[in-house]
Length: 85
Image (cartoon, rainbow, N blue to C red; front, side, top):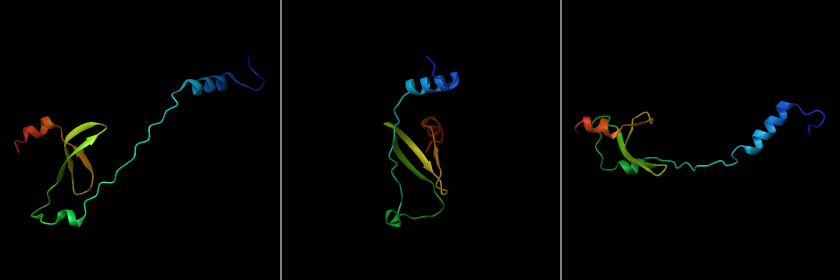
């Protein structure tokens, strides 16, 4: 039964709230930084990009290119193989 002052829309909204998934996944973000100490012995002849491997959500990402602007691009293995490096 509907009570006085309740609209059909508010009842439907309340119904959807009660059956909606009640889980929220929180992911801790790890800061990745490179210090001048990490660059000891590295020769900077020109502006090279940083290539790293990473595990993201339990998946091994083989090549992640980090440019000098600190943005991240993913290079797929098929594309990397075509570079013949």
